[in-house]
Length: 477
Image (cartoon, rainbow, N blue to C red; front, side, top):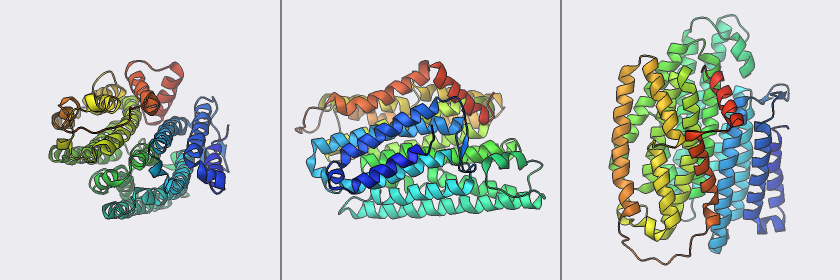
């Protein structure tokens, strides 16, 4: 099955949205497109053959198949959340057509970015996701959300600009070595070799800085807490669990090509960026009392762990993938849950929220489980992935990095628990009437939770094989 269907289906959804009946049923249309996208992604994921399309610009490989399944499953959960919220609160129908149209364009660009085999095409598609996500951050009448949207757009554009300059530096490196420059990833893999020259070193540094900005890594991370805090819950989930993974795949593509040629250079840069991000997020987690910003800083912490795991490579590659996919599901669960909590209490101040497990049983339970997964408790995939990354650090002799990693994780663990757990188990501070929560609203998060547990305990052989194929492409055994 062609991956281009993952672009055509959202495009058809946008066209249908132009009709009167489409506008009237915009949330249902979003859910229908999301369902079709997920079914197509699942078929592509477990097809045996990998192939190219459009003269090699689009390529099906294990990395694309795995991450397309992940982002389309998460988008399906977001679509269910939006459909249910509009059904519960009809006032939210105002402007919903705009959200659905932008979200569908965002989805089509995100899916195509995963399958792109050309660096410039990846750059264009990531920029398109930025252009469509920026308006979604804005909430009508809220000036701070408009400011957050501009900050997100500026940081993302500058970051992607750095990455673009990095691509041209890498191409210049090939010219300097007497090899024909190319932006096709499969051709780059065959042409890169020999010692790194200044152009290649500069190019890799700029690419890591550029993609690191999109991932919220230090030093250009300051847009992330603000954007995640101000955006509506569905938009935050799109940024944190969908766009994050698209940008990460772009970084993975570069690492897949250049790790074998410059293992020390790649490893050192990623580990330094990762540790700096963990340090920044740990300090911020201690200081914040805003629940959305707390999870946002936790996301920066996770991005730092991912950068370190990617820098370690080799035996840590399988654990890295477990951690990445687990991180996507954790963020989707937490941000969608926090949206429900904020709507109930009309505040994001953790000191004003208490007794969630009694007041909002579903939301309290998911916040509790999501926090356990965020902190790397067993039996979730995040625990297993983090353990394998730590094992990789020890196996490669990076004992100092291991010690700093453990110290930062422990501090963030204590700080997060100190803030979140009183919200869950304390006595309710307010009496607020709220319609009974339905199992339907919780269904997508139950699926995400089941995936988290499966990755920590046992995965079906077909899924495990797909993970191992991607790990091998990253240099794993």
